[in-house]
Length: 458
View 1: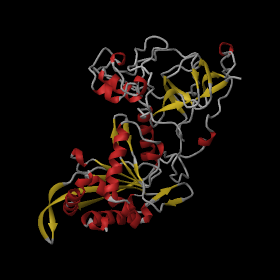
View 2: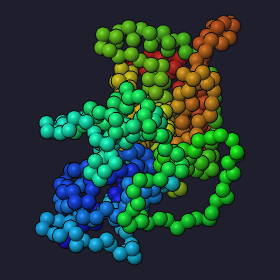
View 3: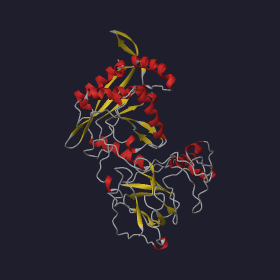
View 4: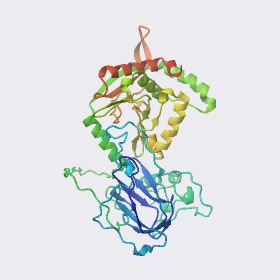
């Protein structure tokens, strides 16, 4: 009996996704664990693994198709002994069911609509969409082939494809160094631009779907935005960028923000950092100021537990651990990897973990549980020379701390006017959950830890 392969739910809030790339074709035999497709979700590009064995009888949704609903049939798998050519596509009247009912109704810790979420990590088996370090087959091709013919596809990771499109690199002319000749990021970075052109909003998928993916009923039509007659380039919004836009809009519309700002003297922290880095150099560890600020925020949240909270319509959730989401800018958009239990970790452990998380975030290789959740966030724009800013809360978290640049300023030192290295920090608080006085207590505790940093390592 044939088996419908359905659009999987690769994250708890995923309702639809883009079928970015088929890695199999009709007639191919697959077994459990084989990678069949690359799917772009609202958070990342993931690889979709087969769970059954059989022959791909029909591909129902072409690669490049957007807005494919979770649970919609995307292919038909013929089981052993079944005539694949006799398999027919499902009736369009059939109503797709969610592919993974375990995810249905589960709130997302980063979604402002996720009511009652307690920030529990989500477990999944699918892997991230860059090179996984799998051993290459000894008999595999050493290079990817040009993808014009059926079965002659170019083997490349989604990140490599995106970079190639941006640089105008022809993937067919690039030799892959990944498993089975797969093209990875490093191969593209050293390649010269070729004939390929960047994708724009007007580009269309190369193939047409055998059966069109179900599309949601249109909401009230939005008034089209008039684009000025000025030379420009239109780039299609990624699912991640759409999600960022939606959640930030919802946060500002639904969460009453209150902003509290303090100036913090950094001289003692900078001195301690220099001494610690001298002692840690033999271990290859170099602390950043941000590593120390993550620790200070975590300890301040434990000291002022009324700010380490999450608001729901009928409950106030108070956390007993400070998991700090750290804003990291990536080519695809902003993502917030998490330092769990930062209040009890050493500065060297925070530094090592943060470097690893940031590197994998930029390569699109984070696991969902590494960026979903968190009890509060920190966003540091000091490296860009930004003096002060107000960050948007990342619901359902109750607060986010915005860090500005440290600079020499006139400052009262020991009751006399002097010069000190000072930064401005602004806390954004969900006023439904956190009163102004409690937010002020948190900012005071944070300032004291930074200005007397030995308390962080005592």
